[in-house]
Amino acid sequence: MEEEEYLKPNRKSDRLSLLVSVVVHFVIGMLLICFGVFSSSPKSNVEADRPGGIVLTSVNANEQTEYIDQNDAQESQISDAFDAVDMPSEAAALSAAAASAAPELPVIEAPDLPGMPLESVATANANSMAEVAVAPSKVKRYQLTEADLENIAKDRAHFERLKPKGKATTINLFDGGSMIGRKFAFVIDRSHSMGGDGLGVLNEARKELSNAVSGLELNHEFQIIAYHDETTMITKRKLLIANDQNKQLVKNFFEGLGAFGSTEHFYGLIAGLDLGPDVLVLMTDGGSPALSPDQLKRVRKMAGGRTEIHCIQFGSGPLQDTDNFMKKLARQNGGSFRYINVYDWR
Image (cartoon, rainbow, N blue to C red; front, side, top):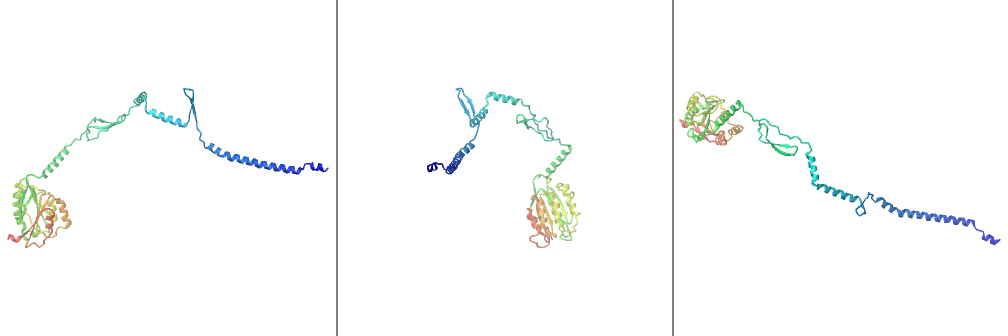
């Protein structure tokens, strides 16, 4: 009996062994699964990054199969492009024939401009895109009217008169320095102080100017401008040709010339310069008002370096003002200055 109890299996021990075996196998299985996952993961990533493509196959003359991948296809395209550049003569002929079959575009011609003769007009041919010299179909010229011709003749005569004619001559007044020119303007003060009740200059000036004008030739011109607060001239307000008739007018001019009124030197100078002389002679006692700096500047601008201005001042006794406006006027315009003491005439 005791032996049978000893040989009787222990069911509790068997169950415990089975449970331990299951747990051990489960753990081993899980380890195998984890090891398999981690070991295969890099391989799957590599395969995922591997690029795909299309591979073409062909059979050559030796019945061998050739494989053409993407790189070979690109090289083939590049080779075809270079082959297209070297077009055979037949293909070039076909291209030229196609170009000749294109419709011709019109040629653009430049229009004729009125009053502007065109000898040759360069126009663009739209078919060949080349400049072609095309002669104008009609040349239009501007026709001068009778009025235009008359105005041109007047202008020509005017400028012809302005040209120097013949040789210049030399004159001097009151035994002074020489003045050289072809056109002379004598500007004399006729205010009260210059008359018989004053310095008595007008009578002496008549003698001097008559002698000076008598020596002029026909190619010379002159004018006398007398001023106080107004200006007056021999006849018309222009230079006179030095002929016998005009020379005789000098004496008559002084005989009818009275001395009165105030003095405006600037008026006389502007009137004389407006005639465009080569030489202008100013004769005055230099009374007030003197020329201002602005007036001197305007006179210099009007003379323009073309007219010499000579100044002769009259007075009784020695000269008092050593640098008056008359000296400045002569110095600024290339002329000379003289002072005359009227006591020397007596």
